[in-house]
Length: 153
Image (tube, rainbow, N blue to C red; front, side, top):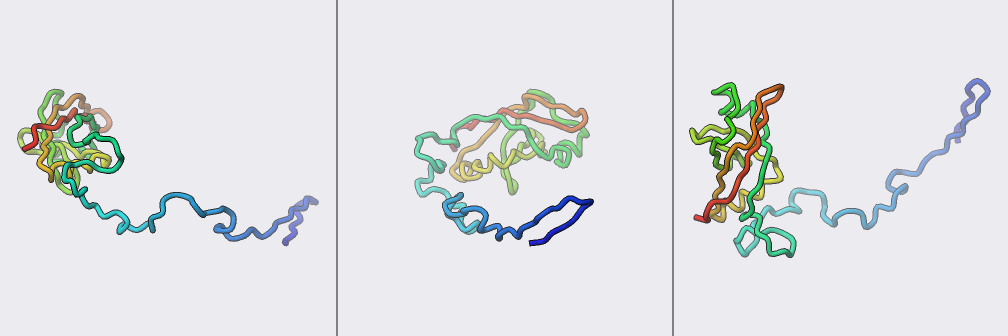
């Protein structure tokens, strides 16, 4: 115990136990080890694109909207110094992560990582296309796309 005097005010400090003793860390969170090896990245054996949960929904067959990322670093913006116009057709491809591609084959932007499941869908012969539904080149370039699955090839 340390005592410190500060203009006649007395403070008392006690030594705290180590952090792992402050909280009961048993039964908190998942039972994984916290290593990437906990997550195999393997596709379900059924091969139908379904992942997790017990609902019979197939995310591969659902349409979605997405605000694209890293637009100003992509080839569409660097070559045109602008964003695509509303209504422009896009297709979804995969280049380390899902990307929106213009009809001229230029990368418009990347889909947010929550759409990474699309890689498994594409491996299972799904394809995706859509349209630009909003775009702006004000302070920061912004593009939103509506995407739907095409017929499974």
